[in-house]
Length: 229
Image (cartoon, rainbow, N blue to C red; front, side, top):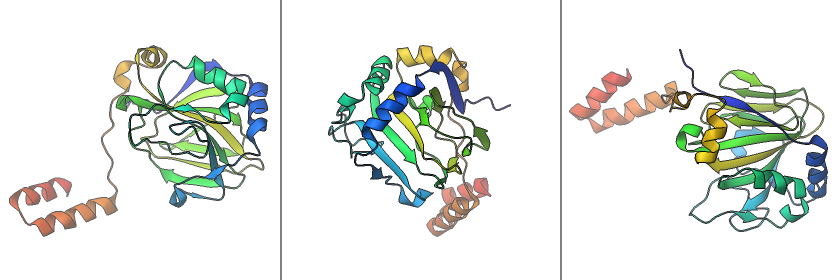
């Protein structure tokens, strides 16, 4: 039986009013359209609370080098967000607010190497949400309420649809595993539940690979084709 952890709702609850107060301070700032334009319809925007450049428009969730993140120009005014981040004792690789507008949808997709088994992870803290938000992770709907803290294994296929009438805003924190996070995660699930799942190949990807192997026309390629078929 597959016991791999897809998500964890941690026993943490943040102050909803304080979260919303900080959000109100930056609601009129320059929110940037999410860069994965093929992955969504409607309006999906972001603003960085920490980035390598210290600029709030640097919303990329991956880095090109080993530079540490620093607070962006807007984090200083957001005292509660800063308090939350300071309380998480791990190195952050991305800290953003993500805003999914009413009626917008994020198409089914997976994010590479964002499971705890990859020594990295993503946390979601909903600031504003509604009952009509449908967050589907590996075929299961997750109900993430305001002020809660969730781990999502983004290696699994997931999608989001905001069918409500107000925008959905999450504080999203990507981090690197350490002993402090091990204690936090392994309190909620056994260590052996965090292992790499076997990659799932779509039929289309399989046929493309078989076609490529046929072009190679070698005994090794023929063997691989047999295994794929």
